[in-house]
Amino acid sequence: MATSIIEETARSLDRQTTYVYTPPSHRLLYRGSLAVPASKILLEGITFTVPLTSAGVAKNNLLDNPIALALEMYLDKSGDVSVDINPLATLTTLFFNTHLCATPLPPSSPTTQVGIRITLGDPGDDHSSDILIYGTLQPPTNSPSKRDADVDIPTLHLKVARILHAPFLEAATPATAEGSTPRLPRPDDPSPRLPPLISFGRKRMLSTDEDDAPSKRQRSNSKPGGRALSRSQSVASIGDDDETMKHARDVMLNMPKAGPSSQFDGGPRKLARTLSVKQEDAVFKVPPLPAKIKKRGDTPSAKGKGKEREVSDLSKELEKANKSVIKQAAVEALATIGISKTHAEWKELWGFMYHGTVFAMRAQMQTRAVDGYSVNRLVKAHMKLSYLATFRSPLTSSN
Image 1: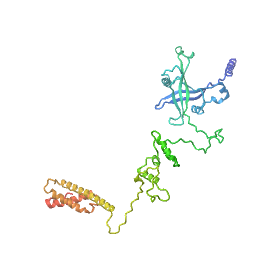
Image 2: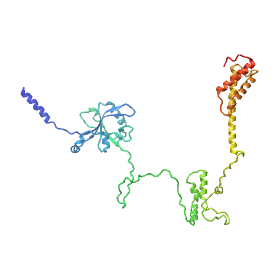
Image 3: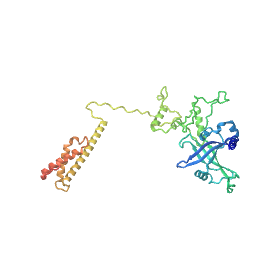
Image 4: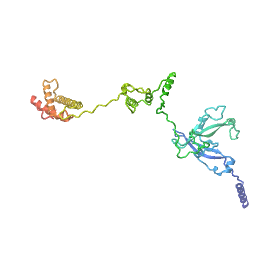
C-alpha cells in the first residue's frame, strides 16, 4: 500500500516538472461588447487582439499585459489588429455577416468595400478616436475541426484600421538670417492668419507728375472698352454711401488752395482736369439763422401756433368721445324702463338726460376720459327726475 502511494506521488511530480511554459501569441487589447447607436442592442463576445512576434516577447515582457484599445490608438503603433467573435454570440455574428458578407467582393481586391465604424469613447466627444472593422478574404484551410462541407468555403478574417483625420496645414517656419536652415518657432512669433475674404476697397496711385497725366489718359482711352478714371470716380467707388456723404466728399475735394484768390483775375478759378463736380454741389450752402426771441406781448410764432392747434384738436376729439359715451348710456337707461325710440316723449327725455349729464361733467369733458360708473349714476339720476315729473311713476324704489 505504501509503495503504491509513493509511485503515485512520483508520477504527479513528474507531470509538474515536465510542464513547459508557452508564451502568449497574441496581446489582448479589448474584450467586451459594443453598443449600437440609436438602439439598445449590445454586440457581445468581441475581442480585439494583436499578434506578438518571438523577438518582441523576448525583448519586452510588458507586452503580456493587456492594454486598452484607446491607448493603443493613442500611442500610434502600427500592427495587425484582429477581431475575434465568440461562436456563442449569435447576434454579433449575424450583425457582421449582414454588413460585411452580403456584398460580393471584387475580383481585383480581397478586401471588403464597406466597413463598420466604431468610436472609441463617448459619442459626443470631439477628441475621440475612430476605428474601422473590415474583412479580408483568406484562402481555405483544411482544418480537421471543420466539417467536410465547409472545407472549400473561404474564410473572411476581420481586421481593424484606424481612421486618421485630415492633417492640418503647418505654417512655414521663418528662416534664419543666413537663409540656410529654418529656425524653430518661438513663443513670441505672430500666429499665421489667412487673408480676409472680402476687400475693403482699393487705392489708386495717382501720378504727381502733371505732364505724364494726359499721355496716360490717352493710352487708357485708346484701348478697346477702356475708359478714363478720374479722382472723383475712384473715391466714389469705395462704397455705396448716401447722398449726404457724396456731397460732403465732393465739397472737401474742391476746397480752394491757400494763397491769393483768383476771382479778381478776370473770372472764377477753374477746377482741375481730374475733378468732375456738379455746379450745384460746388456751392457752399449757409445754414439758416436761428429764430429771434420775441418780446412779451408779441404774437406767438408759427411753431407755437401749431402746438396750440394740436392741443385744441386733441381736446375736441376727447370731448367728442366722452359725449358719445354719455349718449349711449342715456339710450340704454331708457331701454331698461321700456321706453324705446318709437315713444312720443323719447326725444325730450333723452335730451334732458344727455344735456344734464354733460353739464354735470363739464369739468372733465376735455381733459380726460369720463368714468363709466359716474356716467351711469348721473344718467339714472336725471332719468328719475324727468320720469317722475312727466309720468308720476313710483320709480323711486328701483335703483
